[in-house]
Length: 166
Image 1: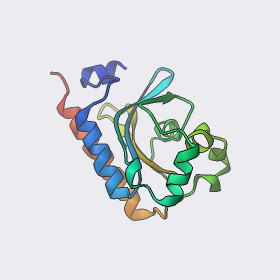
Image 2 (image 1 turned 90 degrees about the vertical axis):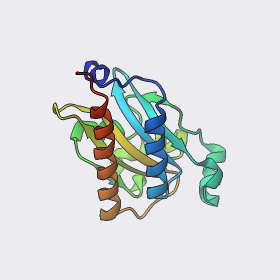
Image 3 (image 1 turned 135 degrees about the vertical axis):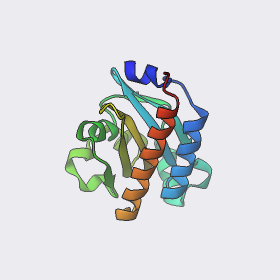
Image 4 (image 1 turned 30 degrees about the vertical axis):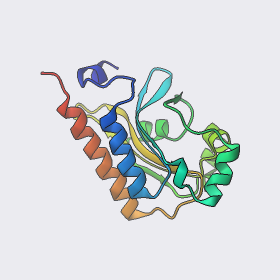
């Protein structure tokens, strides 16, 4: 949290990070994307984009029974804490293919079926959060999408470092 404060990053919506999330969702062809900071016992999506109006029919059916992601989530939910702990990107075209993740609350409560995320690693070596995208249907994400998510993480870190107080 101290490092986030030094960078001027707070647990509040940030229009600059919302714009990054929107571009990531479009690049990934996914309805949700986030810039996620992890602190204490929760995750906060300082950047968030949801594109419910253009979901596919399968996603629309899932959305009718699922909860839409909000700006915060418990620290033990989702896939981002795993990415931060590993300090490596993670691409899951079908989260249900990975037993470790099938019982994750976001799979059942929100209806997430695919995830792609990369850690936000500060030049001090701290992992501050992630940039990620999720979808309620499986995706055929591969190496090009991995490179895309890594480039978005680098962009977010440049934006964060540009805010650093002298």
